Length: 211
Image 1 (tube, rainbow, N blue to C red):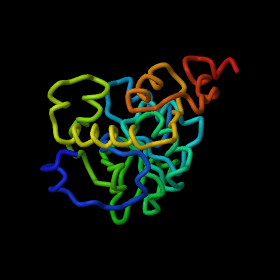
Image 2: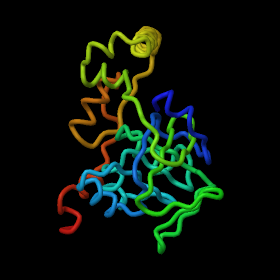
Image 3: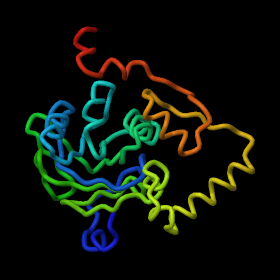
């Protein structure tokens, strides 16, 4: 988050930090509606009790994912990290009513389309739209932006990765389904592919309908 913006709001709940970073968007409780909203240009957060492979389209469309159940090894957490999505899992205070398209967190009530913000690094959940700031590490590695590479955050990351490369005897392989995911993972230091989940490929285009 933008540090000046996040200091002005108070967290209303906390879950498990399952996908680092910060995200804000309009709440949607259904993958299809989340995808449709994204198609209209909306910023989206997918909020579910827990996710399954059928939610993949909504997860792709969303800036971030919030679940009431599950841990850091749940479906939501694993897929979110694979896609580089912000994710908070196991937020027990989140009570969802799918039929009414509403959600309650503590004493606050939200309806589908309301703004919510999540911090996948701390697990904290904030009401409303909190301004975010771009990741200097991602800008430097994936977008090759010179200004980001001059930042202290990027330099610290690069130093740690350089130390790791010299000391490690273990190779890290990525969980990737697409060429783009492979490219990003290699930029972050992955040495190969550890898992390619073919079931995700069926959700592209109209393939799932044919199956």
